[in-house]
Length: 238
Image (tube, rainbow, N blue to C red; front, side, top):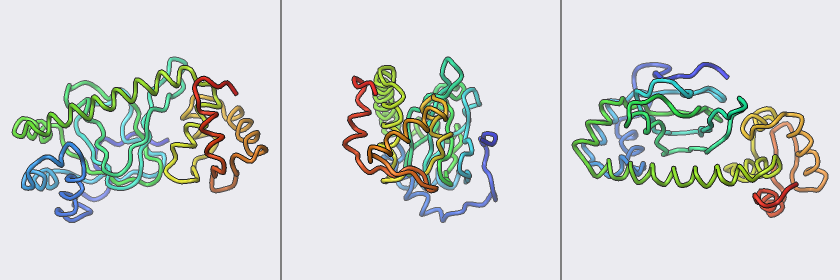
């Protein structure tokens, strides 16, 4: 992957109209509770970020000086595991807020966040976010609720992952793809589930022989979601 990007890429001028960006903020659960004038102000204060597939928005330990709203595309969130392999946590799509934890507490980034397809985001500086939360407490309460929901989901995910073998982790990754096809290489899938490419290849080949999936140059197409859901059960060893 290329280096992380914690500053705008591309031209400094907005690549969308201010009213479009304000509408995008309105669809976000945190910024959606703001008054319209404040959303427009935030939109005008921000700057665009464009990421190519596989490019990192930021990595663990980077300075947290902004939050990002996903406009188009999708991001993967992962943390470094104790053995050096990444542990995949979540996918974030259009409308998601990214990087809020470090902005609130001033600490460094706690995860690696990378683009899956080409992704466009809107960067809002830390000072603008803190001023907004101070002036309109309703947005701060919504942010706390959102962070609590994410923490609960992360706890569940980590507990399930601890009980899953490679087959379970791989099945879950395929099932959480937004469509029937996941357009990732086997090496990328191996990285996301903390396994070797060779083991992922063997597992996918076995599932293809069973008729659960189809393999092609486009990626992996899911044919039998029920079988994969059974494989993703943390109590089932494959």
